[in-house]
Length: 249
Image (tube, rainbow, N blue to C red):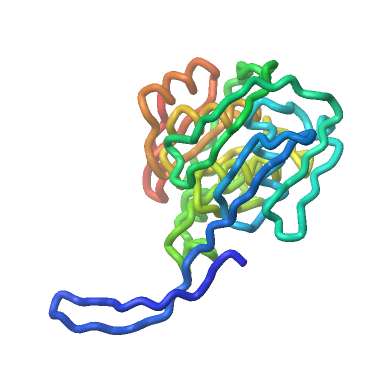
């Protein structure tokens, strides 16, 4: 279940109070076990877990195509995802946390032969696509409407939104959108990703690793993520709103 009822007392400046029942996000803990070894521990929302796992495999440099995956299955409680890859992976130990992610995702090992970040083919994004997507993005999403507690990522093709993912963490929402792209055989060179969150280096790395050439955000990049985007020819568009946007040069 993605949300649960929560009783609150709303207090106003004049001292008056009102009791209400609202909806709160549930934190779902997911372990991703790859070829028998636990590699990731994620805190997420329960929707689109298949897309989350597939996207995480791609953006972490563990796979580079859907055909590398033999099978993904979940236990009954969906607390564990069991991934079988067609090739064995040589792991190097890690114990890292996504420092810029609010959900405390952990990585226990990395692919010792991690797929390097590709050099993308530079893509332009027409202004009418950006403004249209920004207008769509400004409309509140289902879970955020009730909880005000999710990040969101839209996957678009030729300026048209075809998939929207929400999650407690922006990295997870991005991975869900990328996983949808992977599982549905959507060519990365046709995809635009639109995220609600800030764009630090690790978010840019995920998009480049997935082979997507255009990333749009309502928020801002860091100096380092802007440099990385430029080096790999990722078109980075930030502070995208229905009335203006900023193209990072």
